[in-house]
Each structure stands twice: as C-alpha cells, then as structure tokens.
Amino acid sequence: MSAPAHDPRRRLLLGAGGGLVLAAVLPWPAHAGEAVEIGMSGTPTGSDVWFRPRGLLIRPGQAVRWVNRDAGNVHTSTAYHPANGKPLRMPEGAKPWNSDYLLPGQSFTVVFDTPGVYDYFCLPHEHAGMVGRIVVGDVDAAPPYAGTDARLPPAAVAGFPGVAAILERGRVD
Image (cartoon, rainbow, N blue to C red; front, side, top):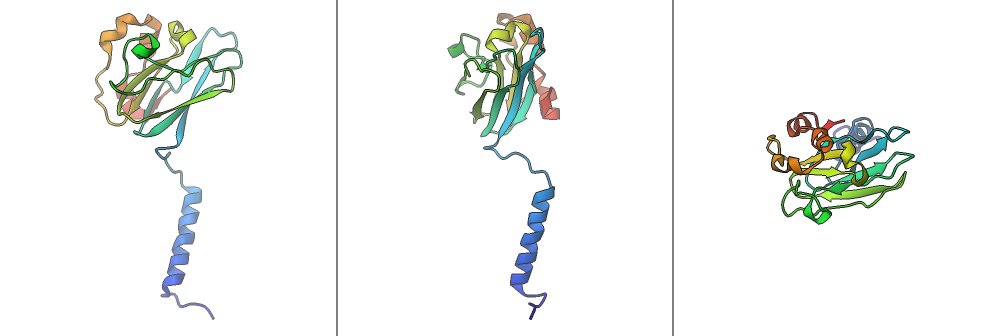
C-alpha cells in the first residue's frame, strides 16, 4: 500500500531527495573554514615569478592556502609586518605570518579573522615583484599603505592589484 500524497513523511522524503539532487548539481560557495588556494610559480628559467591569483577577496574566518607549484624554485608567503622586518601593510592587531621556504609541492595555510587589506610577498622574489594582496570582508576601496611604498622595491609596489579591482572581481590574476 502506498502512502497518500498528502502524507507528511512522503513530502519530507521527496523534499530531502530534491535537496540532494540540487546539492549535487549546484556550485556552492566556499564556507568560511574552507581554504582558497593561491599558487606560487614561475617560468622554468626562474626569470619570472608570481602568485596566482595576486589579488583575492575572502570573508572573515576564511583560510588561504599557498601552494608552491614551481618545480625549480622555493617560495615564501610572508606578511608585510615589522615582525618580518618590513613596514606594516595589514590591519593593526592582525597576526603576521611567514611560511618559511616552501619546496615544490609544499603548502602553507593562514586563517584571516580580521577584516582589512593584507599585503604579502615572497622573501627571495620581492625585488622581482612577487607580491600579493588579500582583502578580507568589506573595506574602503581607497589605496591603502601608500605611505610605505617608498620603503618597498619598485617592482613590488607595481605588482599590487588595486583594492577596487579585487572588490569588483573577487580575484585578480
């Protein structure tokens, strides 16, 4: 004997089944605890190096994982912060980081809890412009940290994507 169409159990099962189908076919945004990946790479000769994406928009509480995809170079992800011998280019009170040297295939993860703009660099490749910017949450689109630009290599300053572009696109390669 089948259950009548108005049976609450039948409606519950049908609804749950439909939800599972939707979950299987619809893309879901990353949850706050899921890491977003930034690749570290370069040309085979090492003449050009980069973070991809260079600019990234995330939510507070979200993690970023840097992965060294470069077969011939070591890289770091290092916050612009006095603790790392650099000017402060991240929110005051936020915890600085330094991945140390990552060999090919190695990764490093940081969770960003404090809203704001975070600038970072690769220790051996900062002079080559290997820098990145992470925007956490809603921030002002005005260029931050301009007062410290003179203390950075020109290639590094030129490598930062604009905050407005990151807010508009979500990521800048």
